[in-house]
Length: 276
Ligand SMILES: CNC(=O)c1c(C)[nH]c(/C=C2\C(=O)Nc3ccc(Cl)cc32)c1C
Image (cartoon, rainbow, N blue to C red; front, top):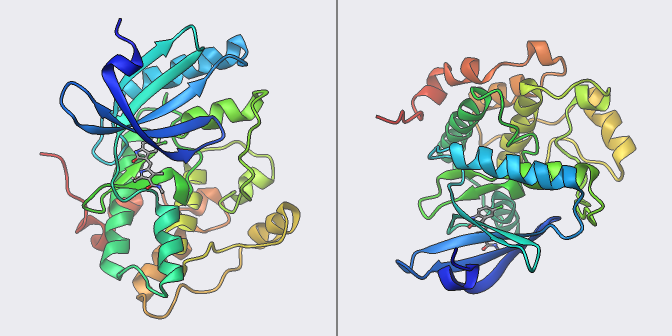
């Protein structure tokens, strides 16, 4: 088939992940601006290659307005690279937005935080309802993207997640696992409720512009998370929002609300726009 360069014009590098680069590209056929994740699989084991193939196949099936849309993939056997073409999100990642808010001493309006929560829950609902999908499990601000209207688009970090786990890759995910849930610290299995914990950390960070649990190193971070104490989100936000964040940061996974319980909250429901 046609090569990557024949189909897409490379515009610039807009991100570097632990797995490769994220390029801004223009599709030659219709001049649409898209994004391309370049994965070099030269050093991958057979198992990792299989993981990439299965991840991409899952990506292709998942179509949801709050999940980053997958468009195409191009394999370059000679260069041992796979190009994954996805939707361009003009407002970049949430991590960058939060940094900008902090720098400008600004903040997200409460209504926008509720809207983000509703959109993230819709994306999770789409993922959770497809038991087979392992897309999320690495929810953090830099994996959440925003389109030109500031709508949430959950990234496809499944690739990085699987590759990073056991690959010889310089898995440069040096970030501190701020959103690690208590059950993960106690080596329990990861489950949907671990996503709810991470979602609670994310919503908390959108309000406080810093994560609920911080520490100098992973060990003391683990202790703080297991203790489960964190300060209230800033007073400009309602007790209702504080209560929802508090419920998602419940230490016991079984007592943490599920996606559907959170979606049934009246304040959340008012922001849930159901596809017709
Ligand atoms: C400074 N960063 C940016 O401006 C930026 C913008 C405008 N978009 C992005 C990233 C993506 C983007 O726009 N679409 C994406 C789809 C998948 C993945 Cl893993 C990343 C992206 C970034 C990192």
